[in-house]
Length: 241
Length: 195
Image 1 (tube, rainbow over the protein chains, first blue to last red):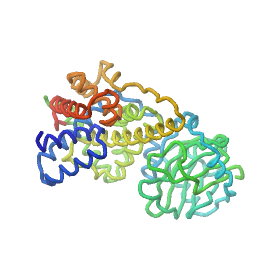
Image 2: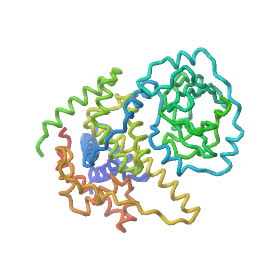
Image 3: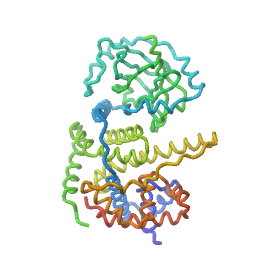
């Protein structure tokens, strides 16, 4: 097998997602010996990635859920990372965790009504989602815990919440903040969020709070796990709102 | 393979849309999403096998496009393959993380490993397809069964070379060689860079 055949074999595996770490390293070494100006290597990379990408079109297209496009655009414009909430019930059913995490949530700090002027300004930002929480009559609850400010605004009994914050530290590399709604001691996953560069955050989330009594925030991997893997760094008690 | 004029036209349009996204054009972003989200969702669902996770994956991939459309390199292929590559990469990462977590949980509990649907079983079932879909399916159908099986398990099933080797009781070298030969055939059938 020639050098380029070896590279082609490894690139084919990589393009299809089947390459493992030891072979990834081998591919890197092989490519490095050929240098960045290896035209054959570049051709192989391009053609194999193009071929793999086109395999996706063998599948039947799936209808896009109603509202997904608007939520995506709203998230994009807000600079946040937000996940959809169309299958909360499905997720909740397999997201039960043990007592240690519940105990941590049990010490949730008391709420503080957030009345800062910037809240009003942020809530007045346009949203393309028609299900936006109306400012009038909204409950606004802040989280307590780590540095920075984070709050949610919602109208009881009405779907959808705004999540907004300021002076929030950036999560570690490869991590995001994940919001959880604690319902009957079970953490139901909420949105995954990344603050803007200036530490601010503002986004609308199409979610039913339902019986949520406490909300919490943990630092999680960017895959947004469906159950918390760390202790909460922020908590908010909605029953006091 | 003959160049599909529809594909060439849409690719030029895709690049223009992506350029406009770089200028902050929301409508261009929406058009790109409407054009490819159904395929992206299909891919993410197939690999991740969970609807909610698939939606997360697609949403994150498109957010990545909005945040950094400059990441697309014209020299590296078509916009749509780039998009699907991002979705696929995220889906494979997600499914392997979940798989590892599940394995750890099952190891701890001694539970049986759940059998999942073999993704190779359903890919080629449907007929009456759009042109692009027909072309890709035809290319897959032309592959020898053993090459198609390995490629489908890897791409649509999200399995690594070692996982396929174990599942099919094949030497790892055989998995690699079948992948290489299959991809060569697909590349030739789909026209490589024709887009």
